[in-house]
Length: 551
Image (cartoon, rainbow, N blue to C red; front, side, top):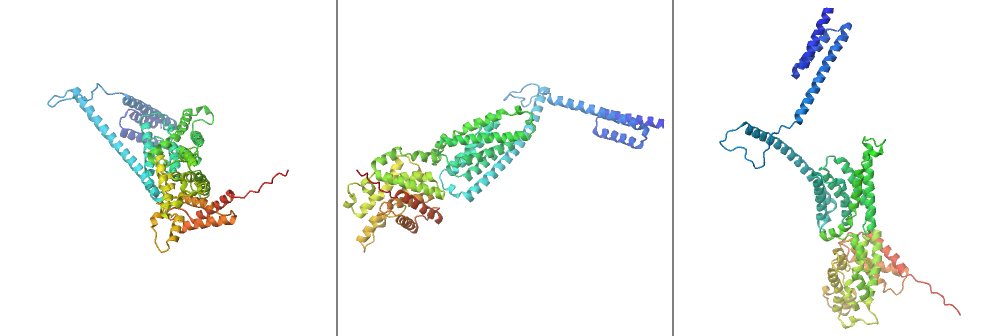
């Protein structure tokens, strides 16, 4: 038994030595199997301890050998094998020259470097192809959205240009900063993009454009997950907090909310990661929170940027509309002095139209501004309009019906000329041209027909140039203008007379087809009628007479 045990021990030691000194993985596996065979053959309890010792000794020797080998490989990998320097443009060897050992080393090095660069170039091309495919799919989805839900943007000047310009700009800036390691991408005010699009277009397009832009920018980053979630949250907050930009304070509030959103989301990520924040809050990455503050400060520059984008792409923001509706504006002040009656009429129409727009979900500020300027053409011939006449003088008495009609119609064309002269936006000029649509100067037209019952008039001489309203806001203004003007001719102001007047005028406009080209519903028209009746009753309410003091 002792002899057998000694033999077993010798076999184990020889196999372990072979494992330690063996250079081939296959030989090691053979010797290992040999150890296992010896162990399976000999299993007496009294020899179990010696077997364990032999195995552990072999394992330790093998582990030490692997550690030495790993350290050797690491040293070899970190060792610089470069010897000498070849300058760009330097001739290495010419035809017919004998290759020296030094030249051979240079050529061999060039060969290896070329292979390495080709492999790297091939990998870069695959990455670039994947990025192009990714961006292409995103842009395809974006175009499908526009085709399904926002076809009108294809006809609206500057809409598509603005959208794609913003997407490309943010993508290029992000890629440039990441490639050249300039600052941190979190200082870029990505929330400015949905703000701009929300102000000029709509909320849905603003959000989708923001999502597309963030996903495209994320391909430049090493860890895009955190970036995508943070920027999407900030974009949503920006859209919801700034429905209409008309005051600078609104933008300041939005910037503050965006900063808080950035900080909250990033803090949540820090809590979710194992960085020891639960025990020590001094480990907070304060530099990132500084970037968020800088981001919010840069977001404030959206206010002056809107003016530049307006002029570049032909949009009209609420900020511009608010500035134009200021009665201290040069053109409005001139109007109040030249045609005071028309100015008061315009103010009344503006109040009626703005309230109706709010009730039906239209753009109230746009309607209000358009109403203030819709009759500016009357400044060219003030006396020919009844609201500006005084002393019973009516210049139409000396003109024919055709001439009078042309003078009245000219206030539309004259208004457009004044608008061009004062650089009014197109959105305002559209109100000037559409507030009468293709309607007729009914007073002169009907008077001519009554005097010439057997003749057919020249319709164009009595017809406004138009076009008919093509937006909901323009339709509201047409209704408000006609109702307010007609209300001044009522003999008495009662609830019934006002109600009948509003119904008669608006129903006649609907019957004549003035609203066929604009997206207004019968429900909207019914709501507008109700608003006009309420407002006119308040405007023309009767007051009680105050008693005289008896002496």
